[in-house]
Length: 155
Image (cartoon, rainbow, N blue to C red; front, side, top):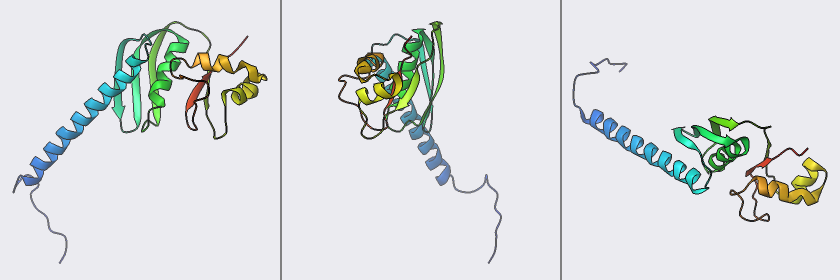
């Protein structure tokens, strides 16, 4: 026995129908995932005009316009901190540009005061980090390893 050749377009259409059904299911699942991600962004109360999201496997591309750099960064963090999302391609434009914040991935054993001490030299400045991550954080004591936070610059 060896390799046999057949006409690709001839024969039973059984697999074609299965492939079409699977493709339709995949598109429906992708559309549902996009709507879910949009609703997560909208639930934060952040104002983003012309919000549009594209999903390709574990990467999200987000489009829109916001008033401030901090709102842009918060939208990116909201999407990036969703389980199953490995990267966010940021295509958001900012009306009033300002300096970018540093993004920090929370490590096991971290607290906001420990992070503040490392970035600002003062553990008591933890509320700056907490406020910079509103409405993403509900409590300064509730952060988890792997979560990404904004660390704003202070002048």
